Each structure stands twice: as structure tokens, then as C-alpha cells.
Image (cartoon, rainbow, N blue to C red; front, side):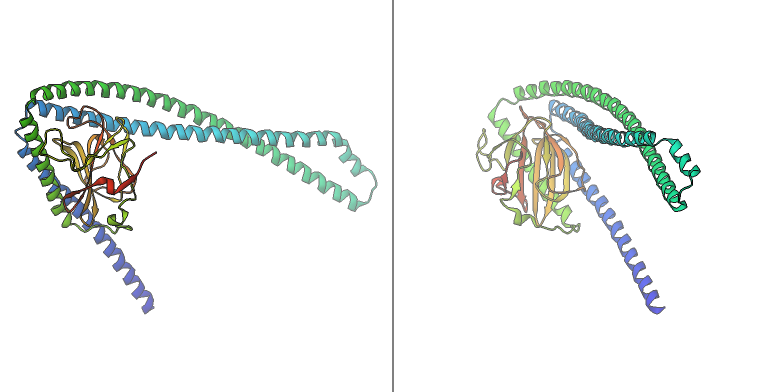
Length: 380
């Protein structure tokens, strides 16, 4: 009895401990989001000198992001419906094949029953034969009739399932048509918004003609990003990380590039205006293509940042972070845990790019590390 009470107390203590851990994690997540929100507000204040044109571009790109996120969701729903429709058609085909087989078996039984005839059964009862023989034959008749009844029942069940499958297929097909129409409408809206944004970017590029102004902007953007990462690291250091099966440092040279496309290895090369070096690489990829996390981690930042557009930063623990810039839309929010290879965003041209591409960095303790030393594998 004492042992049972001890076990119950231990179980209750464990449950309370788990509950407390859950509450702590929730509190930590809320604190992280609060810290990052304060950091974003500080960055906005520092960037208050942005021109009206830059502000309009930011608004246009964030509007595009909202639309692209809905577009991505609709496309996922269409993919799931296509898969469901394929499964239903396959199921219907299997049921039809089973029905043909059951109908053939039933047909054989009915033919055999007709050949024997009902009168044979009556003759056995009227003829003065051995009672044991009569009993045995009557049992055979019962078995035969029972088998035939089961066969008829199976045919009826299959017919019901086929009708049910056909109804599901019809409903799924209608839903799929609606989703395709919705997707087409969303694509049109997205194209209109992108056209508006492209006009604004072209106007901004005309305004920034001098090399000195371009250099000043690049230096300012670089400083803002470094400040952001420094503050993020400080905020994340105060929050315990979840255990990771494989440390990020052991994955050097074994990772996939985050997006499918040609990698422009720009790291540590001088930028066009000089005096500023690239801190990452650009992957030339198709607009709207998926962006994958390169490893397990926690979303530390997910928002718009001048010079980088819609940017996502993942904390991989032990001082390592990966950065994904110029996205079309962001699919994860601050505090979310992501697995290796999980889709986190879509490729875009936000932040003033002329063509779609993913800007990608890896940092250790805030310092840029050559992504080409970490990522070797191309996505198919």
C-alpha cells in the first residue's frame, strides 16, 4: 500500500513538473517575442529616415507577402485534394475489380443452384433413403445457401461502397475546381501587386544614382543586420534551448542548399560599389519556389528589414544562425521550432532586388561564415 502511495505521489510530481515546464516554455516564448518586438520597434526608429518611396516599397512587399502566403496555402490544399482524388479513384478501381470477381462467383453459384433444382431437395425428403445420407445432403444444401447469401451480401456492400466512392470523387472534384479558380484569382492579384512594386523599385533606383549614396545605404544595412543578430543572440541566450540530436557544427559540408537554383558564391567578394564585402551567397531561384531550413532550429526573426526585404533568421544553437533574405513570403513566426528540410518561406525579390533570388548567410557568434563550406548538396 505504501509502495502504491509512493508511486502515485511520484506520478503526480512528474505531472506537475511537466506542467510547470510547459508553462515555463510558454512564458519563455512570450518573453522572446516581446524582446524581438521591442528590437523591431528600435530598428524601425533607426530607419525612420527612410524615404517615402522606400516606405511604399516596404508596404507593397508586405502586401505581396500576405497574398503569396495565401497562394502557398491554396496550392497546398490543391496538392492534398489531388492526392485525395487519386486515392479515391484507386479505391474505386479496387472496389470495381472486387465486384466483378464477386459477381462471377455469385453467377457460378446461381448456375449450380439452377442445375440442381429445388425439386431435388424435395425428392430427397420423399424417397426412402438412409436418414444419415439425407441429413448430410441437407447440411450441404444449407452450407450452399448460406455461402450464396454471403456472396449476395458482399456484392451489395461493394455496390454501396462504389456509390459512396463516386459521391466523394464528385465532391472532391468540385472542391478542386473551386480551389483552382481561387488560385488563378490570387495569382492575378499577386501579379498586379508585383507590377506596382516593380514600378516603385525602378523609381527608387533612379533616385539612388550616386555611388556614395549606394555605399552609404549598404553600410547602413550591414550595420543594422549586425545589430539585429547581436540583439537576437542576447535575447536567445536567456532562453534555454531544446535538446538537439545532432549539433550544427558536426554538419559542416553535409548540408543541402536552402533552395533549388544556381548558387552565386559571392561570400567575401567585393560588392559593386566597393568597400563592402558580401557576407553570404545568392541562390538564383524561381519566384515562389520553396525555401527550406538547412537544419533543426528555432525561428529567431521573421519580418521585413531594409536591404534584405522579408528575412528569416534561424537559431541552430551553440552560437550558429542561418539567414534567409529577399523572400516573397515568410511561412513561420518567431519562436516556432523547425525541422531540417522544412519549408519556411518562398523565394522572392523583396528588399529591392531586380530579379528573384535567395540571399543566404551562416553566422557563428554573429560573424559571417562561408556558406559554401557548410552546404555542398544541391536540391533536386
